[in-house]
Image (cartoon, rainbow, N blue to C red; front, top):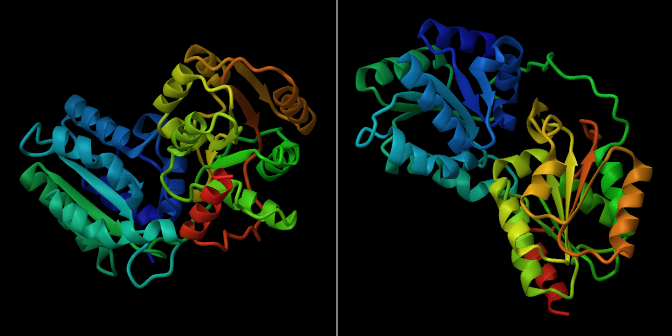
Length: 374
């Protein structure tokens, strides 16, 4: 395995010391080391991977140097447009290094949302004309070869990271929070206040896992929940699509701060349509909790003000169980004029024995659609 420090040192020797991206579980040790040892100005945790490409492009335009963009392979979808219409040699010809975690690698067990992406990770790069190397024991030569190729061609090069490539590194530079409410406790509180015919669209990561386990514990079944196990940042638009077609059913979005930030423009569309039957709940821990705890700006920005500005009609922020219960009681009792938002500030972390959904995505979809058809 590769020591994160050794890897970053080799990049630095090659003149690469600027980083931007979205954390990934396969890169969490590397990302943690970068967070602890690179200044905020030279390590920007972006809202999404396409933004990170833009940041690295801006860095190059300002300095003439090569930036590095890190991501999970699911982020390849977000970089296709800026990679091909901005940095490609047929357009502005901007050099950069990509570091991509290979979730769903063929032959390696992984969650269902990563299977297709894993199969096409390398072929997508080939289609876009991006040369790459899959890191192995000769990683130092591979990294140096990547740097040499970037300088020779003034182009883009990708390094692909398999599971277990980097040695463990624990993030040291973490903000200490005095929040006591956990995300799982908050989810339980909300679920306990739902009506029998309410439906939930939950975002990817821990939120869907914790929702699934609580439904199991309560023997409620899962037909009322659409578990968006992939497609980070798109749960709110899935929910809007449902809410507009099913105005007689209340639709709850269980969102995360990282997912909300990734495609925040979706909030403006929700606010414009302002469906009275939609409640947007953001479980906000200020971190990418599923992939190593790297920080987001979720608890630094005024999500309430943003929601109000784009047209949400009923907005509140809470940070304890009693306040959350009151917010849910208000949603249940008041005549809401339009879409509601509850920003729930929770502490980082999850229990170590948290399981994963035992149903397949297809089974979840079919049960959910049967519920909606009632």
